[in-house]
Length: 324
Image (cartoon, rainbow, N blue to C red; front, side, top):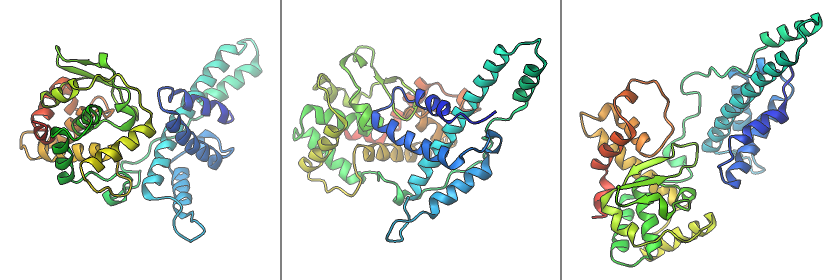
């Protein structure tokens, strides 16, 4: 069976229906680069060896000045997309086999031979070794964590009335729940149930959308804003710059709302790791609280429900105390 790149591309895009147009553009660009690299190779040759060749190609490309064309974090993104293209290719492959079986005439020997050949054809081999993605040092990441002292200054400015209600509300959500820019603009009034003490949080990056426990320290700041205005990602970007200017915080390159997410994740992990009873499960609890999609079936998952994780993380969340 030949590789149907168009069908793979369509299936890949179907899994991005709820993503922003920019996310779709970037991921499709990387998907197309892999498909172009793989060319007419059958899926049976889609394996770790081919992926490593692709990685070598990306890492060896240079700009006109001789500097690497792609940063390590960009290479990692490109390879993550390859993994998703593998999933799409295998889904299309299985569907094609089912269609062939259903349409084949059981009384036609030639058709039966084709079916047998199709049934024995291999899909893409995604049995990559653990840690196959390149490691990226913290200083290489595009969105560095906001320094803790800067976050304290920002929160002090918010509590002192130097920021607009929407700026305070978004800063609170980003610094406590680690909401990304695209997630902040999806919060609606009906998502917050102050009586029940919950907030529904949408997610990007295939995270877990769910209700989470409201952190009581930020409730007054959320109530001060009606969440009734619409913002574009560009407007959110400039809002962050204005917030930092009002708080008199100096910005470094690539700092934005994601910097608050990284600050929150770092501080929560450090706090959980400092508790001897939670140290072994710190990463899982943090990922569950910040709505990362976790694998199922592990032993740790049996210990904690998302609600239990929320309670534990909130109790150990150092940033929430800054909002008191």
